[in-house]
Image (tube, rainbow, N blue to C red; front, side, top):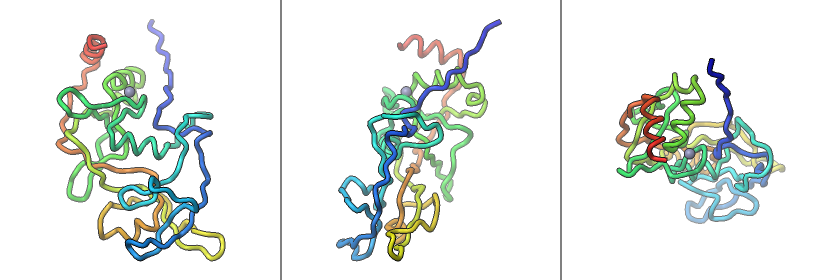
Length: 218
Ligand SMILES: [Zn+2]
């Protein structure tokens, strides 16, 4: 009888204990929009992307692996540069399409466009993930996409507090990146990016073929 050992792999996407930061937030006047916006007490240009402030985490991979927490800057890079959530390798194929492994079906924007907040998975790790996790295999949908575009953020929303600085008033809201939402985005601290999946195509998911394919290419 074949003995199956299930080994849980550490994902590059996950946060480590040594990367947690508690940088104080502050509201500051923003010259361009002539409004208050959420900021850090020691802001840098790198804190804002897509008109919203992003949660800071270290990226030095130190400390214990936190299974359920996501490293925000690393995940943002994975979503926008199409890097594998397991190993940070490029998920771009020779034909310039990008591998993506969806768990269940994708989410959809109100107009039906498929969207996701999960980074892609490289070819080697698609095979490995499916071989080592039968539950994932049952629920997975292997696709490729031609590209992605920033669509929304999952973000906490803050309001100016009395004496003790910004106060969190909304937890993990889904906020679409639009001009209409710009006032709300200025009060938000983004944790995850949602992207549209453009020209989504289903790819055949036959494990034996995958083993052969990956075996040949490695
Ligand atoms: Zn990988």
